[in-house]
Length: 90
Image (tube, rainbow, N blue to C red; front, side, top):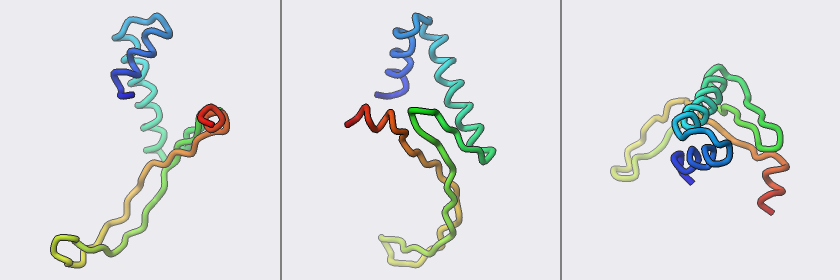
């Protein structure tokens, strides 16, 4: 399922026009992104938790040349599924 499929599903489930469903989906994504940017955790009970993990700087190798390169520190989003979501899949 891609974003357009998700919008179509929300529109059909709620009876909203497609444009309104797109605004709703975009608003949810923006809210999650904004909270993660602020360093907050987004906990959706029954679905899962979005958090931000920090990766330390490290040394790596360019596979093409074998040259050593430094990889800078970065932040990455992580998702832990909730119990209800896990149970639905098993």
